[in-house]
Amino acid sequence: MKKIFVYTTLILTAFSCRKDNYEAPSSMLSGHITYQGVPVNVSSKDVTFELWEPGWGKNGAISVAVNEDGSYSALLFNGNYKLIIPPSQGPFRSITDAETKSDTMLLTVNGSREMDIEVMPYYMIRDAKMERTGTTVINSSCRLEKIITDANARNVESVFLYLNQTSFVDATNYIARSSLAGSDITDPANVHLSVNIPDVISGNGTTGDQDYVFARIGVKISGVEDLLFSEVQQINLK
Image 1: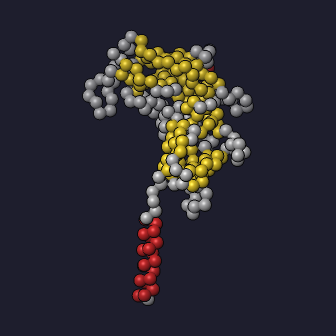
Image 2 (image 1 turned 30 degrees about the horizontal axis):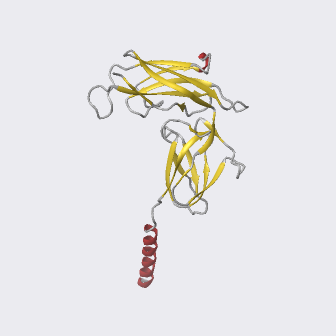
Image 3 (image 1 turned 180 degrees about the vertical axis):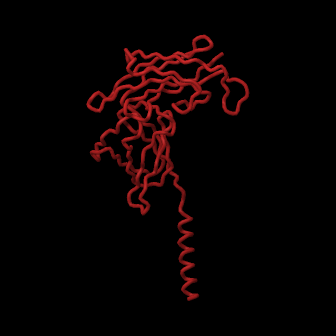
């Protein structure tokens, strides 16, 4: 029995060493979620997509978070992957892949590579402008371009103008906001919002008031959880 126990221990130890000696993933897959090459801006870390690597015993997806500017990055092992954007993710729809004839995209990782992922957004925010008027108000304007116009089209539920003391600006990270109901938009090509600047603006880890804020326009689409956003703009207050 002692010999059997020793042999079993040696086998388990050797297996454990081999398992622990696996090299860490070193290939970086990075790029942007885009529409016609233009990044689709979203709320930071709220939108994800999945990478599946067939053939491994562990059958689970690698979840990749999309940054607020539409960029993403994932450290991976070399291999073949299936890329899937779940239907509930993002203010957009997946595009049918020419190779798979579905919303699943096949990709090979063999060293670091950049790859943009094309999607079909419901809308795009065009010509977003934000500027300070006097010392108390931020004004904004933009044009809402409706991209999906077939049976899958959606209406605009609301448009928001957000301010924050950091560059992370979205529906959960703001110090001031204003809103406009979609039903009140008379001209999607000429949408205007204004928001009052808070009396005190203190950034994280700073003392006293900041002399700048970050602003961003967000669009809530009917029946879609994730908002579409414009690029973040820094606005000086002095």
